[in-house]
Amino acid sequence: MTHVNAGRLRSVVVGTGSYLPENVVTNRDLEERLATSDEWIVQRTGITRRHIAAPGETTSTLGLRAAQAALADAGLTAADLDLVIVATSTPDFTFPSVATQIQFGLGMTGGAAFDLQAVCSGFVFAVATADKFLTSGSHKRALVIGAETFSRILDWEDRTTCVLFGDGAAAMILEAQPGEGTAQDRGVLTSHLRSDGKHLGKLFVDGGPSSTQTTGRLRMAGKEVFRHAVGMVTDVVTDAFAATGTSAADLDWFVPHQANRRIIDASADKLGIDPAKVVVTVNLHANTSAASIPLALCVARADGRIKQGDLVMIEAMGGGFTWGSALIRW
Ligand code: ACO
Image 1 (cartoon, protein in one colour):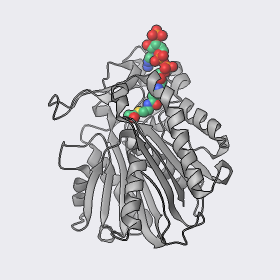
Image 2 (cartoon, rainbow, N blue to C red; image 1 turned 90 degrees about the horizontal axis):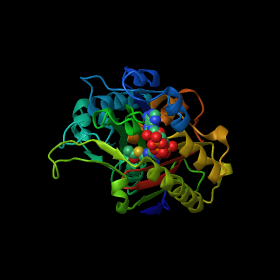
Image 3 (cartoon, rainbow, N blue to C red; image 1 turned 120 degrees about the horizontal axis):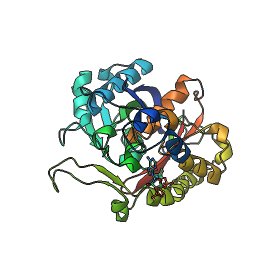
Image 4 (cartoon, protein in one colour; image 1 turned 135 degrees about the horizontal axis):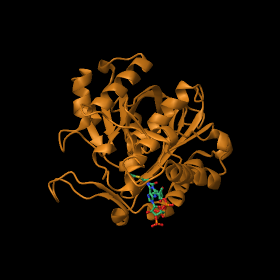
């Protein structure tokens, strides 16, 4: 799916918010449970710590906190929303969706709410999907959430995967506003989504309702994922530049999916993006899958880096494989 907005409506970011579980697990904490070391994890991934949900916390409770923070940031209430999309691969239940749970938690009785599953690319897919609803004129304001509790699907005996992930949630509110149809408009300027199901065996969860009737655990051929990641994300970022007549030099901020510092650095380098423009949070949050990009956006907004009018590229690659980019003028 490739689409450049030609009409006047744009999906403009009017608020963001995040929530991270209080419980922080450092690499040193993991050293006590596993044959691993802080040095190995930092050197291979850049990760130093991750937040892990407490027993009473679930994807929907994290997502609800993030949604409430985004509404407060936007100065809006739930009644102002007519669409909720939650990107997640770790729902509380097989059904109903996390989105309807959050909708209920917000006290929202109108509009539509659904989950979208594209693993680590979920937030980019959800932003692109919300953008189609808003720019078609069918909906006015969308709450887009990335929320995950990957700690619940990790094999905590498998040091090759369990050290890589964390829990968290973050949300963005997009509002349909008139634009000129140029790259100077505020809002989502373009999005580019790709998938290729032949890669299933490289990154998957080995259970599910229809196959094993269990939740399953995450399995990953890390080297294989790494080998494909840089090429895939740089392709869709290049597509976004081409569709909008922009280039790496025009970007104010590059906010990639936060899986691994080496993938982030190699992608930015290949694209010719100044390292000073790259937002990195993988060191603090580890890989929070669909939550990682909105969490990074929230960090960069809170510390004053992302400002209104800035040109921000988001991109991700994840299980499926799925991969995608979206270029947003803040
Ligand atoms: N601590 C210590 N040693 C470890 C650990 C650990 N936590 N994990 C693996 N090792 C060992 C391995 O057993 C291996 O030992 P051996 O040589 O004696 O067999 C050695 O370290 C090297 O292992 P590799 O797997 O070759 O390590 P590599 O350099 O490839 O790094 C990593 C592994 C970090 C997983 C890397 O491949 C990677 O980042 N891949 C991409 C993952 C990713 O980005 N996923 C994103 C998508 S996630 C999603 O969509 C849900």
